Image 1: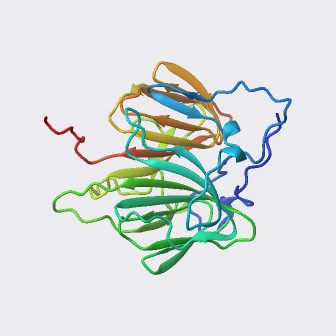
Image 2: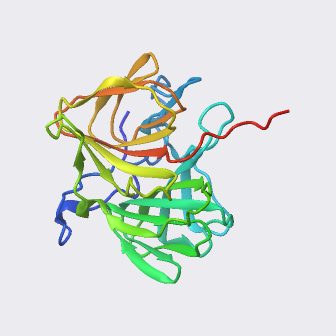
Length: 297
């Protein structure tokens, strides 16, 4: 099977952008078109009670979705709330044609949004202020904030889009908007790893107004999560670069660029980065709130 280059992939190396203090790298995306009729149907796609793996090779044109109020867009829905599985967020990969976008991306005022650009140039306007994002660009839009998106490049633009209903807390206001680039954020090495495992944080972990974090996790070749993480946070993990063997519950799964892993709460996880280059993925997790409880009856 021959994969075509993903639409919306960057045409240049983001590390060459002016004033980029931390090189980004490549950003994998879905595969264009369909496989040939001679292709095999066997793949690594799987949905279990604890996790799902959606490999890049099954993110094809015929599984895209569309939204009212948008022009020139299509999207791959990677995650949405499922009762008894992961329930806090949705995650999309969106492709915009030249000039495509929306003046009203979401009508729900309680939803907060995060955007990460993987290809082309995207103009996001937040509360009347316009920002132009290129590959590696990130934006956070608080709930109840007017915003819009438009592709301003020749050709297609690609980006990730997370949505989560913000959970109010007495004494805390909505978080502020965030517009930044991963190239301008120093990765935070994990303790006692000598830099083999590092996290690029788009939200301040000390800011408890945030009830979700979007981060970019990087492992150098041979780096690992050396224990089975088992915790309450739900995860969406989209592999941008490199390969690894990832433990999901009781299984070890080989993953590479463009693959997506979706984990419910308390699903054990660990990984080994396989090399020869670094292994990187976008990570969603819910944080900083009480666990919701059922009403007493």
